[in-house]
Image (cartoon, rainbow, N blue to C red; front, side, top):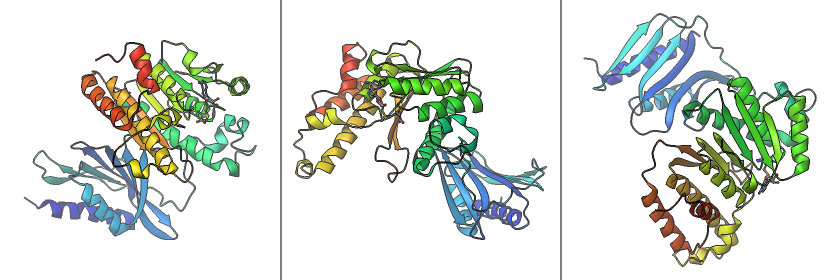
Length: 397
Ligand SMILES: C[S@@+](CC[C@H](N)C(=O)[O-])C[C@H]1O[C@@H](n2cnc3c(N)ncnc32)[C@H](O)[C@@H]1O
């Protein structure tokens, strides 16, 4: 039997050959083992400043990350992921499909079969990134002032455009991995503001993913609601509506996906509560200011001497508020994830909390003890989401 490293070398020799004779079509690492957030690595050649590189897209549950490497460096990186966590790597060339597979005993073999692809991939040059929401194809972006009449992104709105695309990328991953109905999917976006993200989400769910979605934006400011409804009408988005209402007063029994992006202070908690009480399958929020907890912080821990600095106190309040929110989601049977959804250089308000509803809820007692301990340590008497859950009988262990 051949040593695994010999098999790996043979496989990556095929990759080198396919790059040099331009027969490369696709390379994917798949079939993971163990507990990992990384689902796939997709590989393609790119030419950067006239030099051929390997571009690796790391596909995680909630986001993608792209890194470019010199060819040999890229191959070493790929090797390090074989058997950790990937059990298969498939190289598609125009001459053959070449699969490297590890069996139950982790013995590697190569299986060659007829080529799936008849055309090799172009070795793309430094091109602008293809976005999920294409600037020149989305009419509403012009009405919202993100692109000009030629479909070019307006310079001052470039960050917003990037943010919209990042957000759609995240939602796409979540929706594809959740058990949702494509026939009847209701999204409520609380604190929808000017609706940049609400429009993009509707467009992507309905026109790209073919989901029969109704999207409703809830927003205090009537002038924004009227503007958004008129743009929705102009674009023919018949199941996109905006309602002028306070989040806490909005009543609905059906929420499949609850969104709350930068809703102010405890409005995020009101929105989270609406999502939890309606049994939303997915909850996505990016909190904004964290005044409620900041006002209460009276801790006497080893951190006390550094919390005299306003910036640390602010960050501590953010972490505690959002940490408590994620624990409260867990107490209600959601799996929670907290991550940075857009780079710090674009906005400081870049933490996203995602809750995905699980089948059962066994943890409430344990999680409640963790929440109580945190509140005690930091002198927190009240947190809005917790109060709402207690007052409405959702949290009574
Ligand atoms: C910072 S903006 C964010 C807009 C949008 N979600 C985005 O991320 O682009 C927050 C919006 O939430 C609205 N808002 C704040 N509190 C609210 C409440 N209790 N009910 C409804 N809307 C609220 C504000 O009027 C504002 O338009």
